[in-house]
Image 1 (tube, rainbow, N blue to C red):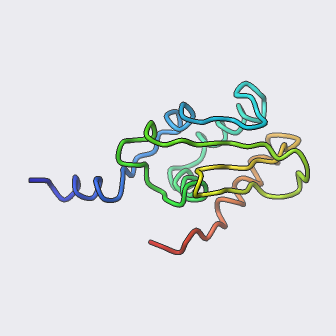
Image 2 (image 1 turned 180 degrees about the vertical axis):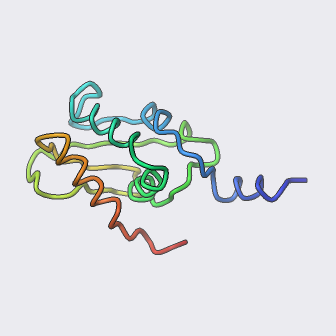
Length: 126
C-alpha cells in the first residue's frame, strides 16, 4: 500500500528541484559549458526563488515537476541563438530545450530570462 504522498509523486513527479542535477544532464548546441554566458546562466538560475525555478522548469519542459526518476532521467538542451539579442529566450517544451540568445552581459541575461519565464502561459493545465 502507498501513502497519498507516494501516489502523488508517482503520478505527478517530484516537486523538489535540484538545479545542479539539471546541469549534469544538460547538453549544449552552439555553446560550451565553460563559456561565461553559460556559467552566468546557471548562477542566475540557482539564485532564483523556488517559485521562479519551478516557472523556469515549466517554461522549458511544460511541467513544474521533476520526472519520477529525478532529473537524471531527463535530457535538457541549451541552444545558442547567435543573432537578435533583443528577443527573449525561446523554449521547445517537447524537446526540453531552451534557445538562448547570446546576450551582451549578465544583467540583460537575467532580465530577459526572468521576463520570459514569468510571462509564459504554458498549456493552461494546472
